[in-house]
Length: 356
Image (cartoon, rainbow, N blue to C red):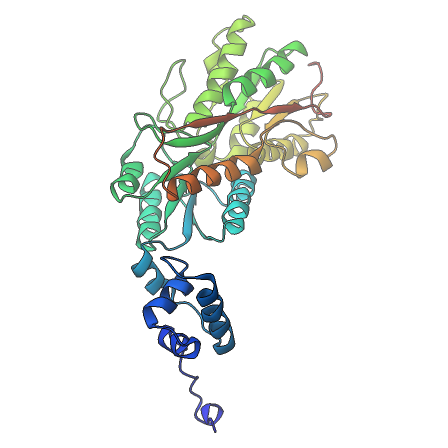
């Protein structure tokens, strides 16, 4: 009779040896069957798994990793877990990993290369089989090199890193920004602001190197569309550092300083939401006083009044495709790196009108 309930101690954990004895096989055979590696006949595997189920055996993840070299775990490092983009991309990647029977570990970099380096170190210490990364910097490859030096496959998503060829899944940001800007230009706007949270040491000037490829491509598409329309000094309409300075602060300044801004493109949905809120606080109507376009089709953009025109990205598919590419690498695909570029789609709602 067990006295576990009287003493407050738990039952001894069932081991591989216990399963082997119950199944009538050698310990090494039981380990191969439980770990799904090596040569084991179907009948023996069934007998071992039946015994394991009957005994309530729970696999030791660390022991499995040490014996097989695989943790059956993928890692993902995102820029900002509060941003709906990363929530949807992570869900896409997680769905693919789960369907393949793999666990998933999430880390947040807060778009800071130093924080990202720590997150990567933790992921590697957890012995992830591969890593998905939205790099905090597209110009500094050191964090990415640390993953490659550790022998782990890595797939980038949303951004790329200059000078290193690895798999990546990105959106067609340059053409998307051009399409959004042309919509405003065709409506008659000439004083259009683009706002981004990307940190930059100086006032943006045409051709300046930006540290995040996705934003750099959007800025390039925006500026080139303005230039083609004959707008003077188009780079002056780019406003960076919104994370540091505050989106609401930048928006309020642009809408009250007499600069004549009649339209705003938010480089993500959180920025556009803040601009929408500031416009309301200032008594400005959308779209009659201010036209607004957001990147990403966040839920709020279609339930607001008016609904907000967006440049939608296949965010779930970006994460899912990145995870598929990573699984291929984990399983031994040594082919040349591939970069998947997924199209964006303009969804017109009620937030764009000709300027007054």
